[in-house]
Image (cartoon, rainbow, N blue to C red; front, side):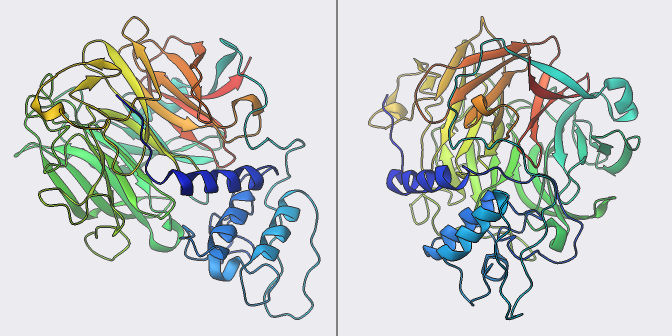
Length: 484
């Protein structure tokens, strides 16, 4: 097997930009303002180092990954977005108040939404995380979750409400919860009537808010349904208070031949394209060879444009556009059962955990057009050596672990918080069965470090607006990853 990365030159350039930009500490929190703040170039309702990255991309004629960059990014009000605006943003998030223009052409840069941290995390970690030097600190206990507890598959922070989130139950109910304990969980939405939970790997599997949720009120759900058995991606209308259960529009319906290996995670990339990870369709050993076939959506990461009012479009830069016999929705392939996928909030890199078959679990850094080997390989080990595997380039996993360490990998996030700077830029992931949590450095090929082992089943991770990480237990509440 060999390692091949598409677009390495562009990725390296953006990574270098990111190291420069994030050398100042980002603000945390959100804003209830009805209009975008001047300086909030990425429309996140906070002014931080990512706005400088958006401005740099725009000034370099790169896709800026935010619609409002052209207006809000013009910090100095000269009618252009350029390196001068980047400098003002960097000064601002570093705690220096930049001089404001006296022309009145545009409003001044917005007020900070929270106090800056006292120390700024570096672009990459300057220390190594301590093995077994971390713990889980309870945020919401199982008792406090009450009716929301049990079969919790995911936690999605509500845009614009940084201390509130939606707890997603595999059974189809979604509850609005307070991360600060200011109110008891309340039912936000319920799709249990259309979700099939007949198999242990079936049900409501993922929820994602639109990047423009404050403006468009869109929410995306991924779930399994019956008669016929299928995996469904649907779009709904919602507010922070409730999901409109009658507003669904089915965007994708993928037939399934077995109740397992549904994969299942939705994430938006820096171009606001929707990414969806899918399993190989089930059974054992990929009996239909879906992982390596490009004419099926099973065993893949898909990328689609859902910005229109109805349906979806294929991004023109997708790697298999125009390839005979290939589904153009495919972004990457060769996956067995990818469980939890994320987009690095600063670099845009895509990471996921792919659940193994009989011996190995793996973590993958996903690139456009990448083939991750299943079912020719399980982890780094040959699984099947036949005609479908001949003459292909496969991308090695970034990390693997054997089944003496765990049985089902749970993908996490690249840590971009400030409370544990030694973890900055490390991808944090876990094992569902054993409660082990590891981190692997995204900047090199060093071995993973085990951060802790706890005694509850970990089903997912969540990222707070400031970059700190929450850990979701399938049965036992919500926790935050902290240093011992």
